[in-house]
Image (cartoon, rainbow, N blue to C red):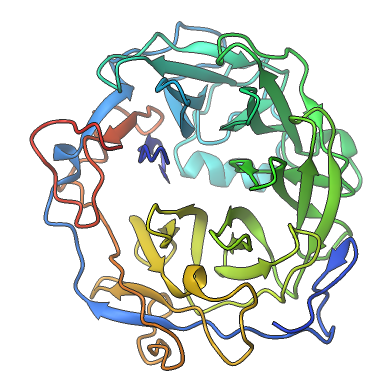
Length: 437
């Protein structure tokens, strides 16, 4: 997860009629609405200090990238992958700030002023912006390689994310950002999703990124790509189709190990859909979640059609879906209301039949705290589901000690990449690293 300059990761070897056609879920279409309920549990804060649960992989004074123009100490947008041979890979972006477009900056004055108020350096020399980098471990995370360049385009190379395909190819998705502005009038400043592949275990990568056949004026993906049960791979991107309209989600599929891609569907509603994450449930259905409203949508035909996106009054950023070994669906996310690293669980979304009946919900369980704003945790709106099996869940939030911001020290432009020594649902930190990532 990302937290303003300090970066932490959790390594997890981690209905009726549906909309049809390439564009799904337009407002006003006659689509089923699936109700989603949330069970609120009091308490739930971590008993452990964050610093007791992490080990720094890259950060101030620890395994930093070699200097280059544009590197100001920030590392973030990180993503882990465990290969089938046990090797651990972590990709990340290394630059000068949360956003690191090339200089001279092409950013509107108001946006630039706001960025600098948030901590962006005033004087920057970054002719090629930041770059995506990678580290690896062959001893289950006890030691890590020196950061190496994964891809270095002329633009801001952000958020590399990975999947190991059935034939051993490693697919990496990321997005490039030349700057910020009106992409309908300045199309050369638009974001674009990039895809590169490795056929030697991540040691070398294609030098030129492939592009998705996207109809968006500007698009991005946070990944990761997911491998379906039939061996194909899906990538979901987000962007705008028309000026003045909210962002939509585009679902893309490859059946040749990421060499070529086909647009399956565009999912839309009457508000923004961003930072999507998709997972395949054990029964074959797909479930997708997006920020900022926590929209959820399902597909039972491999992503060609989707149910109408529904929300449950929980605003979030960068949701990440993971199906656990017991079939529980885990969503890791950031909270707009109270901050922190959060998790919600659902068992119903996994254990129902292949079609979700329109009179049942998909219950998620979360916890509210006194520090959360009413708009972020309106407990009177959250009611347990009475028509489906109750979800057993925990919400995890790790507190940092007062006056600190992570697992290292440094100015706001510095960053760290860390991982928990152990992952469990109660998030109590053991004294040593466990093999069970």
